[in-house]
Amino acid sequence: MNTLYDILYYLGLGFVLLGSIFLFLGALGIFRMPDLYNRLQAGTKASTLGAMSVVLGVGLMQPSWLIKLIVIILFIGISNPLSSHALARASYRRGIRPFFKEKIDAYEEEVKREKERREKSRTKENSETIKEVTE
Amino acid sequence: MNGIIYFSIVLIGIGSLLAFMRFVKGPTAADRAIALDTLSVIGIAGLVLLAYVFERYIYIDLALVYAVLGFIGIIVIARYIEKAL
Image (cartoon, rainbow over all chains, first blue to last red; front, side):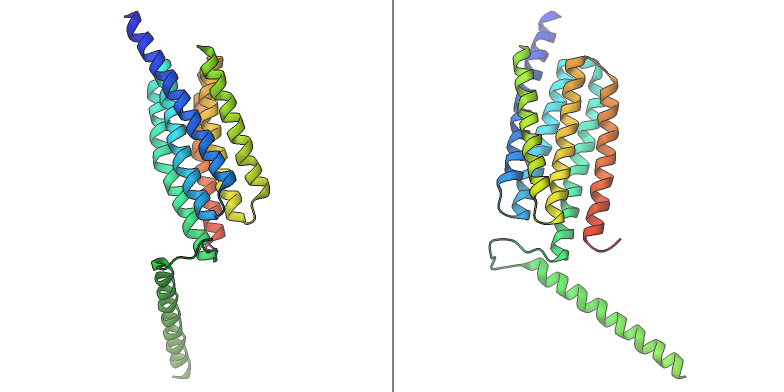
């Protein structure tokens, strides 16, 4: 019985060390990368893996806390990619372009098409209201 | 074996310092929001690790609440940057 807890303890220590290294690398990527999208890429993925690994390691070292820690792990795994996606979409629509020029930019065409659609519907509404007013 | 835990706490501290420097420096608002997101994730991991070191169960509840509030804050900031709010 004692050896099982020992094995879990050392496994948890390994997970904590691995996770803290990944957190450090994610923060280094946030600091060093030249561009907003590179920063987002480097920071979010590495820091998600690092935080999940640290929390799992603490849960292995202290098995009576494991249930609530698994809730935290699931929440980080759901919420962190969502927030990074929302940030990337918002900054692209705000007009921040990638640092290195790309040959194909599919999302730009999509944004343009959406804008045209919106303007067309707006002009249609305007003409309808004008017609109503004149009638 | 406590040395490994202290070493990871030091690594997490250096990482939060680097993210904070990007938070101070970042040219646009979105950079600052990204740095804030990373800072909150690092803070969650640090709180859970400190809960183990001090043997306090209550810090884990604190980390959970901090995770929820940080996520909502980042989503609100993203909507604001998108000019949709």
